[in-house]
Image 1 (cartoon, protein in one colour):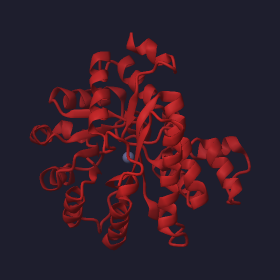
Image 2 (cartoon, helix red, strand yellow):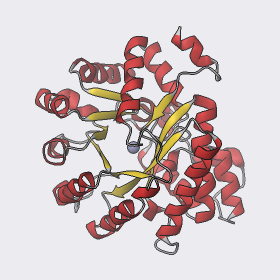
Image 3 (cartoon, helix red, strand yellow):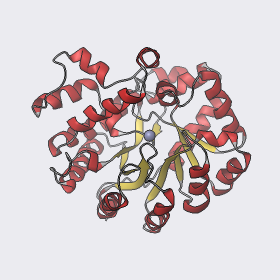
Image 4 (tube, helix red, strand yellow):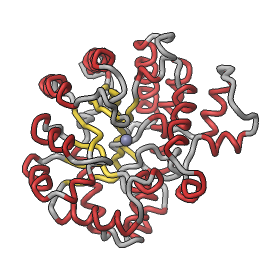
Length: 344
Ligand SMILES: [Zn+2]
């Protein structure tokens, strides 16, 4: 039975993780040590308090509320990762750890380099190259692993700053930066329309394009993304379950959704397991290509296997369907089949 085999770490089915934010992917203990190595002043001297500061669980969300807290969590993880010294072990440990514990053999990691340069104090190229070195180190150590980096633009940044990140994506494409994404909360000055040309250009350059949309708010942005940008993948996108025409467009264009169940529940973008099941089933039954991801395993207290087990145990998908979703992720990765490092 596949599930039982999954419990044996040496015989686990190989997995692909396509949607994991570096800000949520690093073990609290590693962040704690990196903070101390860099002399970063933290609001607590107690490790367990720190652990609670940088992770979030459904139970605590109910007790504490989430919106402000979530921002604060990313503030600390991003600050601690904001140096070349921290970026290399951060990426290295994330890829190595996911391989050892979960047999993740295809691993895409995403982050915003401008949220890791302390407001311009650190050099962006140093930050990006350190993350590439961490990735190269991990793929050297674990020869089964293929990995790639997705650079994130941010809705709260002006276009000019996002354009700089895009230029870095192109600059390091030959070193394993495989794609581009945009994330962050809606902002009054943000217009997805302004980014259509940038994303089209990225596709022309052979980059993978994935866009965070259809996670909250109305569907107008997601409709624009699907019609005009036509990315290969969309981050979350589950609200499309409420719109038949949009579901049809996703299927017709072969756009793959990156679902992150525990994150949806912990952040509260989906209110309950039964609502999650209803939406995920509607997407699946419409034949939209789905993949399962963590969004940042350490922050949400999950792993890729926990996500699959959760979906099976709650009757969201059968084991057979989950196997199909696992193979969707293997097919939808932006990481080339022969690996991403040193390709020129
Ligand atoms: Zn995300």
